[in-house]
Length: 334
Image (cartoon, rainbow, N blue to C red; front, side, top):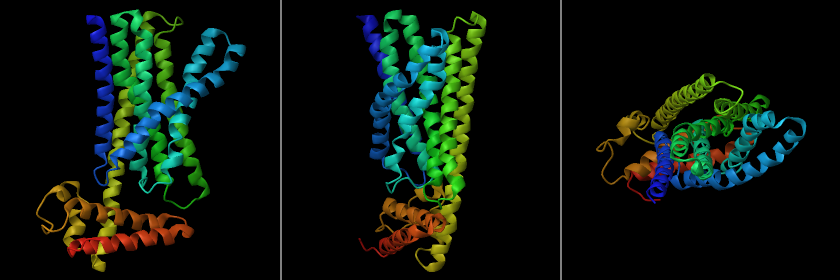
């Protein structure tokens, strides 16, 4: 009974850590946080739709391998090639819906939604793995919990975030031929990142390598995940810095138009300054005003970069948001 209780506790802790990853990634988007309900729905898609369709697609694609390759090599090909292709495809299907929502504004948003889908997939896949290895004994079970929580989950997160980043980048831009290539590149990077981890993890348990080389393979895999995680963190920070410049540029112009005070155009783009109280009159709702000004800047940028036939729609959003900012400052409720 004690062993069962410890096992259940380990699974619950693993799932809680993954959910903690989700909250942290959502929090990172400090200029215009996505609706948490939509991030959570994306997480649920990865957990339910992504895993179910991913398993079906992987099985379907793996059938021919058993016909042409020996079992040892077909298992490796299934793990390193088929699984990443199928799983990244099914996780990424959520973007077919997200691109039609008003919330996917830029590459940072795409990264966050991609990471959420990857974490959802990882949460359910981890539980399935835990159930499989549970009879192997506590040593194998706890080692699996640690590896899949700290490394495999991050692989899923980083991989789908790479795809999401490229989708977010092209979302509000002119549909130039070369831009269509970017999501394909993002998907390829997601598959490569996923496949590299699977290759090293597969080699660590393969009979083809000695114990020393197998240990080296898993060590290299852990280092790979650490480096990719660091790279994604840097990419996220650079994306946020770009958002800050966009907000600042367009709000300065809005201040010149009289939409908001010049001082606000300097405060709103700064994550630290905008959080402080006292720079707004007490009757102006702080969060609503900051969000309206921020989205106004983004919509103006998107109006400048989107295809000409969509500019009228973005222009209507700009007019609406500009009016809302002015009304909030005047103490008028829309």
